[in-house]
Length: 330
Image 1 (cartoon, rainbow, N blue to C red):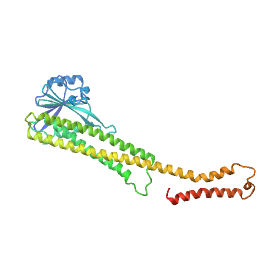
Image 2: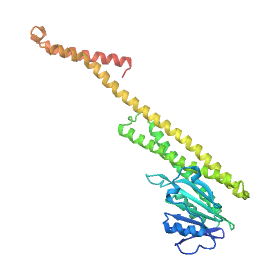
Image 3: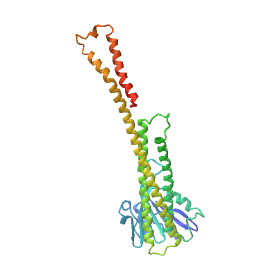
């Protein structure tokens, strides 16, 4: 699908465009969502440069993600999406700066794009100016992606705090965590760790994109406002990366803690079985002796032999357990 956004004073207006139709004179941003080969060719005709395909966008080499060809800049970065579902993932998004036009190529629908569009299409949004160019829209999209990542990290922080309270702040009268609870908590914390790694991947891509833009802008005369926005975005990206590192360390700590608690619970269970086994050894020995059933065992012929044997077995079981209890071993 091709969505073209034209500059209308201090806002942008979007309209769907089909291959074969002319590009509007005030076109500022061309958004390609799951484009077909025909749509790619139509956009290439409009901007006079090739459009990255889905195979080109998954390349991980720096030279394949950030480069200039024929005066056109190509920037590709992984963006987190589907954050409201259980299948959070990252998908590459390509930004093509061709003169005053910006072309975005994406095969996913990050919420940051819809948030930016909802804001930029309203008058007095503070993002769009009368002399706005494609690079201004690009920086606005990066800002929306960064803000969205910050919101996502706030939600992840709440999840980590909830998991931390469930593990470390259980009340004394509460029963210990069951095996099912341990399994669920481990899965929950492990999922948070995997999610944070995807956030880190997205932030790392944004940081590299901004660094490339700064290096590229050194040769040109960008406006001071544009450079200030770039500085602000770089600071935001760095601060979020530091915060992700902090959350990752906290997740690692919680994983180590819960694994340690599982070990403690296992040791306690094994200790109970060990104490029970030691306590039952003397009565088992006595029962084994009288189970020999030799002919010359005087107690077998006495009326008090059976209750006496049971009593000795009970005393021999209680004495070791009493000794262990006095020592505080259980």
